[in-house]
Length: 193
Image 1 (cartoon, helix red, strand yellow):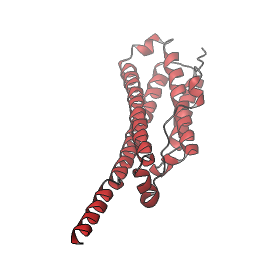
Image 2 (tube, one colour):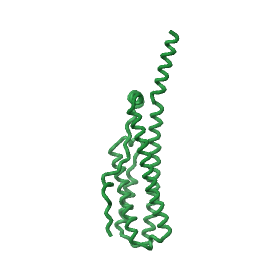
Image 3 (tube, rainbow, N blue to C red):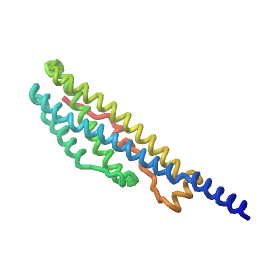
Image 4 (cartoon, one colour):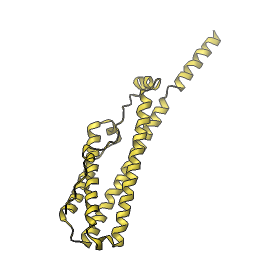
């Protein structure tokens, strides 16, 4: 009898250890960390834009409409925020992605239109800002990829047995949404001079 109780307790303990309770929480934290890293890179881009537009304004009589679009897109992008609890909300995620895509699109138009201003391209301050902005766009792409990988690992874990059982009985963690490009991203932005 004593042996049976020990065997049952050992079995229950091993079942509890392998239920994934801690692992699922660790995976969810990885999603939150990846999201914070992505937000950090997006914030870096938002911080660079005022410097870039000020440099452009000061150096060239450029199309005011393009500059205005960049400034407005930045303002709209910074209005839309997500909290970690919103990562399971598809509508909020879509709104956030759309605002970031609009900002990326307006920046692309700005950088393409700069090609018509050789004196601006020769300014060291502008060249440095442009390089930083391009690097930031690359960092954002990497951060999006890292976030989506963390979401895939987390979503997969909460759906697999026995973790799905632990989640449904104890944790009630929700599936996280991927950072997906908006439908406008499939359309090449038009640049008019």
